[in-house]
Image 1 (cartoon, rainbow, N blue to C red):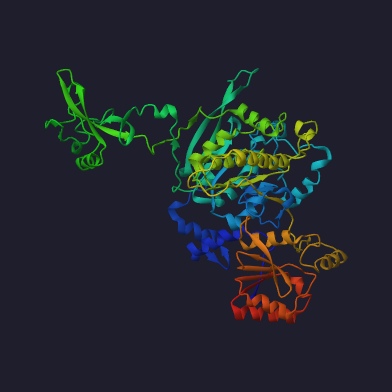
Image 2: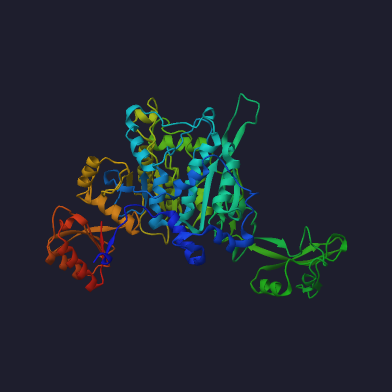
Length: 632
């Protein structure tokens, strides 16, 4: 019977095991007795294996442990917080409060390969930045212990001051596992933009090359911050920071930017098709001679019947920018214009290519001097909260809109797991309002306490996560009032978000030390009598079950009554869940549920109240109807 009942796992997949499974498919001969034969794998890779005595790469103290931190499964879950959400039933946006390392692990099940764009603004590691609390062996346990301290004195957990030693190593140990997990979430055409300054730029480049691959480095964007700093020391005044950009694979492309007024001004000629500019069809600059491309030296007939050849200054034989077939195609498409030009000994016709303004985009530059600076970001936050500064150094919304414009399509899923004041979410909402897009966001923010004497604390914000949620709410309300309907856009602007909070699993689990005393073990066994925690709500149980079944965080569910049993119905009845462990269902009630023929039926183990016969009968009913039975 047990093979007919699927048990929902208590933890996220073991990523080490997942990798071994892929190796088993690609190279089965490298797997022996269920384990990877490293020597055999090295033999199979042959010339592709690096010389172990001479290696190129980035190495630092703690790197191996940081990698294990990414691979270690977690029992954590995300608990819905409906009273801190907005438009729960209709929104496709998500805000998560919690340590992003644990959250990134939880997101792997459903969102693996589904995130189109990631933007993060991690701590710059300037000596006083907050460093995420993962100098520990059990990430979730430490996080839960730490969050209990949030409201006591408002002090930060730690800083990464240079006096601590291993200044750069601590930062790399924080970033490495998060980038490893983040890469898994990107689509094959996905991009990641990482804001950084001089302190860790060099290390971030090396780290990015290792995680994403050197060939997937897209570029380094230099941004004018508009706020020069560095007075009082002998170095340069710093007026820039950077964004390091990587792609998941070579399927990723940067989108073009719409032309502004100054860009459009050079399209100063006009015909019935609209504004255009012209460029000579003769090749100019390097490799412009006939011998460079002989096939592109040929005569073309001018309007007066003369034959025109590409002749360079001084009379040397040059070449056109294209061959004869392409030239004929351009003529047929109305993209060639003849102009009379003065050659010194009289005027003669010369061909030009026409470039129309309509539909034209500008290739993005890696030097951004035309986006809002940091002061604008601070002003935006003050304006939306109608108060003094509640957050230090927020990124300007215009900067992140630029990232959205060149980084993904209008229906993209955007992830920011260092959400801060939620500038990315604000930018998503604003960009959707401006161009009719349907972009969705997932924001993750640690509940870092605000300083005890700060303006944020005086306004009632105990944590940065509270600031983030409030900003999304306020920005959404403002944009909903001012947004103009866009032709062809989805009806209504989604300004809501589902709020979740990281926590331990809602289900009891075996978690004891090997040297536990007999009486303590007995007490632990007694505590496992129920499959679900007593304080767990039906919403929390359902959310965890759906996450572990591979559903999204915005999955729609409705309550449904079948034969007197209160059920949760997901996907229009594709999944039915009975989550009341205190009330034992009858066989007739369970038969009525199975007769609905859902694809999956989930029931809490302790709902059977130890009745193995009832459990066996249910398994047989499900088998007869082709229904997958899952217990938790």
